[in-house]
Amino acid sequence: MKVRKAVIPVAGLGTRVLPASKAIPKEMMPVVDKPVIQYVVEEAVAAGIKEIILVTRAGKSAIEDHFDSHYELEAELARKNKTALLAAIQNIVPPEVSIISIRQPEAKGLGHAVHCAASTVGGEPFVVILPDVLVNNGGDKTNDLMRMVVEFENTGAAQIMVGEVPDDKVQLYGIADCGGVAPEFGESTAIKGLVEKPKQDESPSNLAVIGRYVLPGKIMSLLADGKPGAGGEIQLTDAIDALLELEPVEAYKMMGDTYDCGEKLGYLKANLAYGLQHSDTANGLRQFINALANEHE
Image: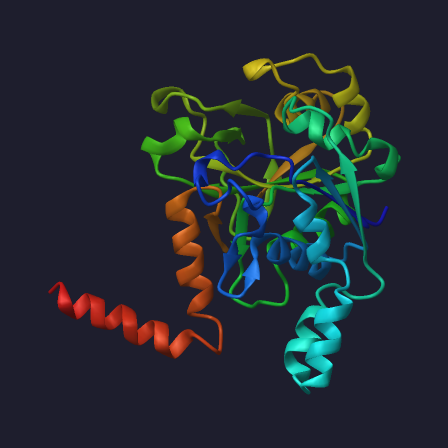
């Protein structure tokens, strides 16, 4: 079955980037000239997604507004003949892609946020994208999420994106147990289980879950039946563990670079990386970085 829908939970408070996220959603913080959420939606669209489901809460209307039309601004740009800027705000998503919002009434964990979209997803397979995390494929037209979708459509096995982390950092992540088998970049291998934040000497691998999932529709019933797990919340990881008892789940090893924009250092790194790829900023930013390096030699 084709994967046409993506669920993007955007109800988080963004406490790791306070005070910047006090008055604006963390997903609207800009990386170069676009908010983080736009990069994530563009990633989904490039992977063939036609329906974006934002799981949101009160105070996040700026995200919905960003993807809506802005008549006054568009009219002013047209009057001043600023065609490039006009196109940039009119073509954020293609006309065949829809974006809808669903409220998460209270914070009960990632699994609960995903399950809030159950009635809209129906029985279809779908993608889950965590908007804190940007996956940068360097402008490659075939992004990692697209490869995951193709693998799911070919095999029917749920796909969990993973990436290598230093051994002394495994306790910060959910870790995939692949039975000692390490997939090649851009390829998938069977998962035996997921371990949440293991101790270094007890970790089954250094393959951390990145924040991209391609899941069958049946995961929604597993989430509905799930009991609160870590932190007293409904965890997506627990539902994936239950899915593993029913059918294969695979770890897909990402090819791109990942940046956690939900924390300060990751956000700064993302701005540097994307700034060096942007035609308007690449040369000037490179010169600035070189000048800084020379000052500190």
